[in-house]
Amino acid sequence: MKLDMQELINFIMQETGHSEELVEVILDCELDFLRSKGLVMDGPPENESEHSEPIIIDTDEMEAYIAEKLKVSKDIVGGVLGGEDAFMEAKGLVEYE
Image (cartoon, rainbow, N blue to C red; front, side, top):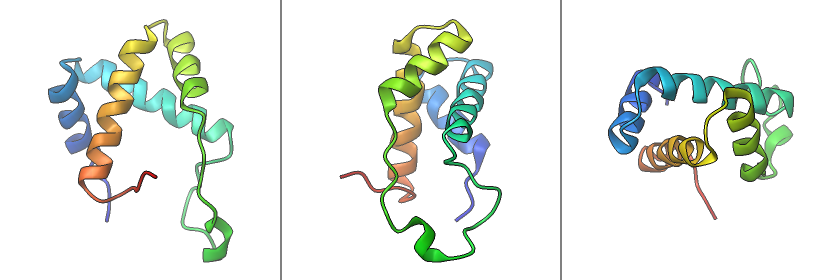
């Protein structure tokens, strides 16, 4: 299933009351953080077994990184990322333990 970014952004805006621009910049910065950790690939893995282990992300570190880089509060960042998680879970795109 392909992720519709505009649908995601609209969902987060509705959940948080934040502007489209703020949501977009936070999501872009999240992607920068994930890339810096080697967690974003340009395409599907060549071998399915490459990602058989669950991916663990230190959300506190990620929120601090985004908040510092964008000069916004961790509460705002957490709200946007929480909205993203809710959207992904509702669409069946992720599973949380």
